[in-house]
Length: 633
Ligand code: SF4
Ligand code: WCC
Ligand code: FE2
Image (tube, rainbow, N blue to C red; front, side, top):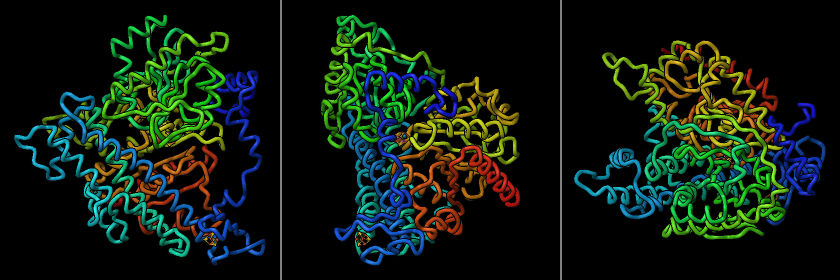
């Protein structure tokens, strides 16, 4: 197959798609074909279904069809409302995930399934929130911190706590724009209210509401997700792993962990090491239990345990097509409902575990946090017992995998940086070395490349092309989500990739002993990126928008990504999108996102579906920001 025709960068994917065709199994590519051309109205964001008088589809091109909805809403209103609702949904998803982790911290106990793994981080957070720690049992502190965290969702008065962590100039901007986020749930509810029929019609107001809600995600729900996960499950340290479908094992029980919530996957990791489970594995004649992760659950467990990465979002069906998976265990988010019919074609069990994500045709075994390990063992047992049903003639495990280093928390990054600190002169434990090399121009800048896969592009082509181009031009890359897994599969998370970097980045990687593309975790962990950027800004005494740093979502698809992009821009960092969001029906809203928002936040969105020219624009913008920074320092 010629390279352009391949669905992804990986030839193995095309082999598996062919296997699907041979076996008469439908995949997302078949459904994409059946979908034909997407609806032009939906694509431009000008379809409104908000009230029962609709749906109203307005024509973005003047003179052709209806210009206004029945209530008089214009294309600008409809586009802005739809965008705001995407931000609300994304914020809800990340934040509700964090809420579950807060509950788990609240139930943590010394002899329970969930314990405090990072006491230092807990104490630091307790002190930040003025919770007494002296002479107290660590679990009392944990429970009080968890309660405060839970109150961040619905407190009736005041604003959120974490925005206090942002650099002072940034907080001032948020205050002036009146976008300092209040309680997390409140911001989501306000958007749902304001976008109800007959409320806000002004596009700029809708954007400001979206910004405030997105900040309740980035400096609220998501940040809680990261912080509390580190406290309960441990703050990650670098570890070696492998990535791509070749990590599946022919003679072991393969369990695919897919979704987002580490409360479940942490327990599955523990259950898989349980002597009772190991014994059962021997009884069924398997040589062991092989866990493999996908999407953010995959990121969470690879960060903390080095669990291998099976693949990214778009490979979820392909993983099943290997015929070698005993169970796909899912929690929430980014799970295709098609996994039910596709697993039916094999012996694979598809097990849903969350009441928030029940899927027709799946086996639902509800995960009970109160009896977490027991619950996880029931699920793992299902997988082990299913090993005997594997149909050898249907198995095809592609022999493709790459080495990767995962698990860089900000703490781990700073520890690496300490290697180059002369402790006679400078204190350890700061971002100074990073700020110094950016200031000096050894590194031209930094990019956070994050987000999903999207069938609208050749999978992973954009991620990898952009990453390669940036590192070759001395821009260090940090990555999360499925972009991180794409990088892992392409070998960019290994030190072997240092040779692909420019001279400056090469020198930094050698000295600090890191790969040129650094895995910072799951999608909620994008908050690690904004904190790292903020730490560098504070160190240099500037605002985030003065730094030569960018966010990039080359292949985004989820509403969560829209919320992330909006909080990143609201945090003063430009965002480059490789997929056009459904906003083009409103030239006014496009102008707000790609131009006017810069007057408000110092950053804006760039949209370009060609990864090569998108990468050029990123480099250009980084140089522009450098000039601005040099003038300031
Ligand atoms: Fe149509 Fe207005 Fe109702 Fe939307 S809110 S469906 S534009 S009448
Ligand atoms: Ni985050 Fe995107 Fe992956 Fe899902 S797991 S597909 S939101 S990047
Ligand atoms: Fe995710």
